[in-house]
Amino acid sequence: METQGKTLAMAGAVIALQVVDAGLHIAINEVETLRILSNAVLVIGVSLGVFLTRSSRTALWAGAIGYVVLNLVFVALFGLENPVTGVNRAPLFAFMALSLWLSYRLGRLHAKAGAAAPV
Image (cartoon, rainbow, N blue to C red; front, side, top):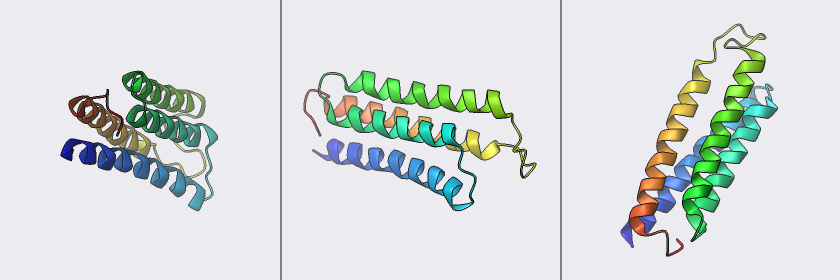
């Protein structure tokens, strides 16, 4: 039961990080649709991964891969430097690294808890 609580806490951490990332963009009036869409894809993947019984691993993988692909498409289209501020996109990669690490840990915890029993 304790592992299930940790799983929910880890899912909450991933979701909170995505909300902070998207919220920062909205707050500073730099809404980047692909980035916010990638946040939503990861939140959906994590949510489905935690609450599905059979396809939890697939949902987690799909969310993480979709998140990475959308962010890489964003960088390919708009570059490694923000044209408005002239600042590099290091925070993007920091958010990505932390999000993917948390998602990985979530997957490990969920597998340990037993994906056959929904959280």
